[in-house]
Length: 300
DNA sequence: GTCGTCGCGTCCGTTCGACA
DNA sequence: TGTCGAACGGACGCGACGAC
Image 1 (cartoon, rainbow, N blue to C red):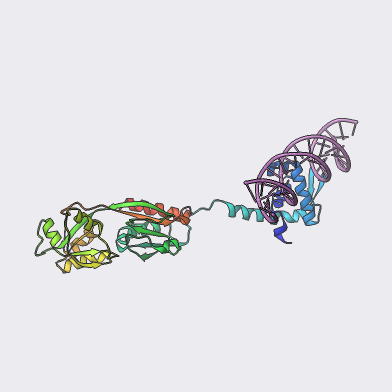
Image 2 (cartoon, helix red, strand yellow; image 1 turned 30 degrees about the vertical axis):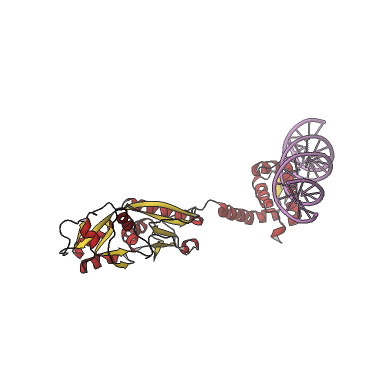
């Protein structure tokens, strides 16, 4: 039988007739008139080459052929109903790998509490983190190679969703025993001492540079690196200084022998967020994970 | 965008068979 | 014989679709 020539609504009618064994009640069950149900039965009879139902005392009685069709039709309709049902996501039983793109800074801040939460609530959900800078949304997100990007985003492409996660303040760091910087950090000493700068691109000023420029100041850049976690080690072994995210500076200060200073000028507050492609907007698993990340971020 | 065709469903009326 | 329920046919409306 070529299914493309069959009106599959007839199976719904057949299922109702098998359940009700009464044409009028079967019609009411499906939501059509008795006449339409009678017409459906006529088509079913032609399709299967069998009367399927014969008149009985009160209603109709199924033939052996109709009874044989009952279970396969019921199973088929149940499968279709399941396919059309609203998709659900059960974190406790889900098996899924989620690909994130994030800088080492975001990994340091978010991954430990996020992994602890996943281990507790969704042990089958695994994370794969790809290194990525802080400021730009990678093309891999639109291509489906990455599920979620975390960072500070200047611009988000169209057809992408975004959520703000937390704010980050900068502090200044220098090694203990630095020849120019003692108990207090002055603007003059900070600007004149060479800096470690974290930047994935070398063609533009950072937020710190723009804040300095607004005051007519310009700092000396000693070295540009691409990893935040490298900064404490470089500052500890050289006379370089840095403006660094507070959440990175504080955990490393004691072990690297660093001093943390409040910035001598007001620095902008960085807003860390997550970005995803619109095709994942309604995905139940992705929606759940975004909620978990937002919840974890609220506690960092 | 308009028009004709086709399929499908509704509405209404009629016929037929089973049964109390 | 009256009632109930299935089957059938005709008129009509509606939406999809192709041709122009």
